[in-house]
Image (cartoon, rainbow, N blue to C red):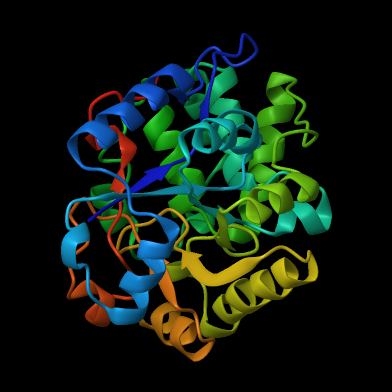
Length: 308
């Protein structure tokens, strides 16, 4: 089986000339490719696979997953899935719905979409110092992150510094300072799928799962902080009266992005299964041995999946 991960699927935005996204027409072509070559797992088949812990005749088929509850998921993806009789799992970070505020990870995406990477990195490097980057795993993060992304010059290092290297207690302020220097204003309005539209998607056959509260790198958090990210996200989804299920997806993904505490907490909280990012097939053994870090391919590993 092949689980596929998507983020932004949309059309070109003149306000974000450097933004990386999968064009909706290429998304349609990729779905055609999957249908012709592999076929899709139905929701009932997926439920049976999870319950029986057997893939059976569904080996090689595709399951679709979408991260971050982005507006384009309702405007572009949901109609296309509906038209084709398909479904997906949509993973939601809950803090934007609680605070009406963009997550830092998405503010970084918007900055890198609006401005030249070299300029962004030059501004950021003037603001950071060694005290802000205490993590001992910097070499590991540099080695393991953004390997499948073909970013413009300066973008990869800009994202690594803010998403992986700096302490979270400095990150929000650093992003504020970079955006202020460039005169850029963030607008949370219409960036995420609305609560109403999440419910529509859920009521029409799609699954809604947790993508934590604030989309942190869980491996940088202690056990108590991780528990809050997991537990509070599910509590809030339940409060929204969305037909969510006990499924979770690791922010950023990759084995560097979570640790044993994360897996222990997911099991203790009764999370049925979780997705990681690992470019390989989902095997039957994963359903028992790797249930809290099931492998997912990035969509860019298949024809028509390259970012525009």
